[in-house]
Length: 92
Image (tube, rainbow, N blue to C red):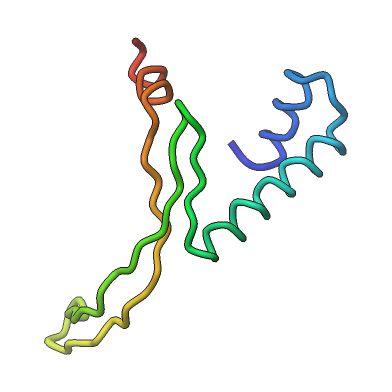
């Protein structure tokens, strides 16, 4: 599902206009992004939790060659699935 399809589905389910739904979704994504950039977590009980963690510097081989390159340390986003979402997807 693409963003436009998601906005359409939320608009139909909520009875709001697509324009209003788009504003809300854009604002929500901005808040999530800003919160994760600060290093805080975003938790939706039952749905899941967005967090960040540091991935250490490492070495990797380039496929097809014997060349080894260093991959610098970086901060990555992680998502832990909540119980209700996990059960809904599993069909329970």
